[in-house]
Image (cartoon, rainbow, N blue to C red):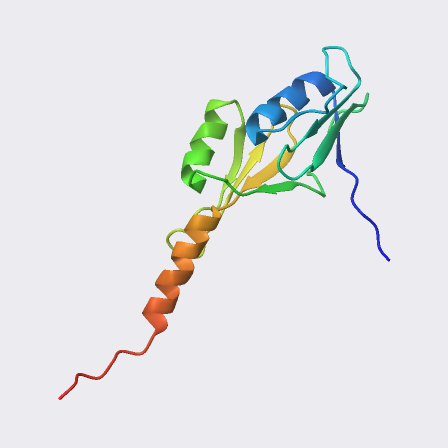
Amino acid sequence: MGCLVSHTTVDCRNAYDLSEWWKSLLGYRDIEGDPNQPGHEECMIQDPATGHRILFIEVPEEKQTKNRLHFDLRPRESSRDEEVQRLIDTGATVVADLRGTDGRGTGWVVFADPEDNEFCVLRSEAELDAARTREAEASAPAEAPSV
């Protein structure tokens, strides 16, 4: 048994503008046969590779407090630091820079999108693999010299 997550819903003031911003950020696209248009109160986007969907719904209330649910993003092809710069260039706001809190190359950066919804950018899989390799090499016992 169990349930399947159909999609993630984000409440917002402008569904079209925010869906376009996230679509560009994530490389998602509109649902085939149901394109999003300015003025739509509900706009859904989808990951072409995985099918994951995000629905943006307009609500009258302003955001009041910190999100209790947020996205943790892992770069597909770039490094965390390259992605951080790309996000800053697209208008995301850095809320907290927690890079290096547990040593060099660790941590993440907390951002806010144009409507102040928080999300985080983590290290890429390649960066994680490199860190694991370094840790394994550092903890491996040194070989005794042969005689």
